[in-house]
Length: 484
Image (cartoon, rainbow, N blue to C red; front, top):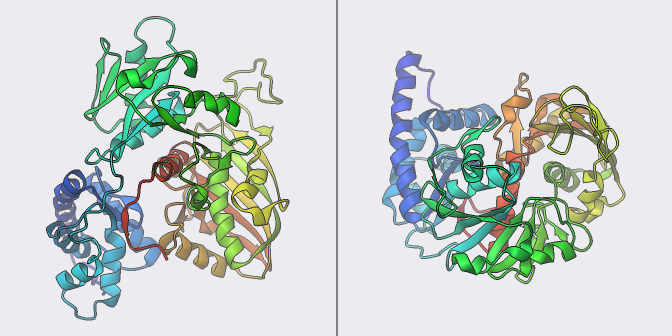
């Protein structure tokens, strides 16, 4: 089903704009009252603006080469809102495109009801009861995870961010300063909502979510039960402890149940790249690592290529944004080269991401080398994969395969796809994927391939952390379409 090119583009835009505007209250009501999240090709529509919704449609038109628009998706969303659907994640874009391709004259309402019959009347709950979550540390990742957890609170019966643990800052106004850092971010923009600061009770109220700020110098000082918190999953984003012994300190705190680390874990700690080896998470696991941003970026692409072509060996070069670990100006640093000004230099450094791949993909153990260059940008990095594949291919064939993986495979949340010849790093700020495959940069010669993958090393990684957190908590949604 392809709509003809409009005679009047302005009129067409205004009509589609009105439909997108009318979609917002339906999307919000589904999420608020039924815990139903609506997406378009993996892009969330909850709490999105009219333009965001229209851009999500445009993305599908570009990468699927079809004419999906609000004219097609609006009536389907209307039908969904009338069905008695239980908690679920529904990809409106995938459903609309399937109707465009396969309906064969079938009534739209009958088609949608048939496709979603499993969801109608469902009493399935993602969790038996809400799961308490605590953030230990409130830096770059901690504040972004906060934004995500508040955004995903929905009806309030899944993950509930109950507390943040930090050291007391020097000087007055600690809580106000921390609220301000959450409210305004130089890279990711303003917080979507309102934040109320209650200094009498050391509480932040973010879009109605009451979050206790607990001041402590170590886990030994914390008793979560004093704040009504029980069996909490503690997200340690300080990086202060990366082995089981250090992280076990959290489990000694009354009210703590499990720990997830937002850095590569050492020793026998499971390093989880969501979408790849999260099936290894067992109910008895009480300490897990969400690996590193770079490991999360490269492993999904490597897995896709391993499945299709095989990989003999390769090298991963990471062009990485500078981080808080580096110096703003030249000064002493215990690490090699990292003492030089991050804002003025490209800094060659090591990365453990290539070796860490083997923890998620054992088949690649010993087959990858890696290095990193820190560059003067504050966010968004790139991984360059120089690989010898197990079979010959072409750039066109490999790109088409990766496009299909990004749009239609179980790795849809991990791999995004761009075919634009004009994109640069800032275009990927706020990406919710582990990486974005840049098809225009692909180089293939026989079985030698050089591939370029962008990733928001802050926000995209934080999304992967939250996915691991949900899995660790046992969150389980009905999903459309079902993973193959």
